[in-house]
Length: 126
Image 1 (cartoon, rainbow, N blue to C red):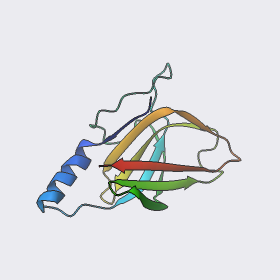
Image 2 (image 1 turned 180 degrees about the vertical axis):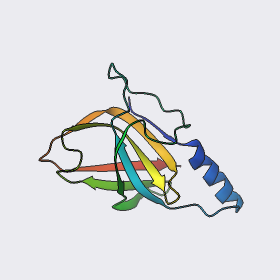
Image 3 (image 1 turned 45 degrees about the horizontal axis):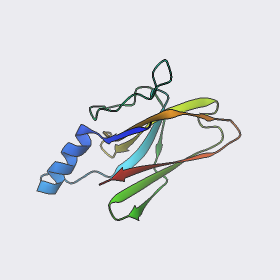
């Protein structure tokens, strides 16, 4: 079962922004990795304490964002045919303009063939 969470640093920034102490940095990048499962293929539970992906393979700028409902921000990134070809992707994260991991998700491995493009969406739900 997929596991996703807004990280502790993400929650801290939201709290401080709501109080007016900081301006919330924009989410600018999505990262992909293959460290979301253990050696037996079981999805590793998220804790919210993550500050990096377990094994980051690629980080890309966000291509677009939408609001499918008023309390959800959906961030999208397209992986081209050559990007992460022949890799199994099992974790992803959203990074803000300050370089902090603010949302993290683990899931069963998704194999990416070299002749395919993938579009990944990650929702930040409030």
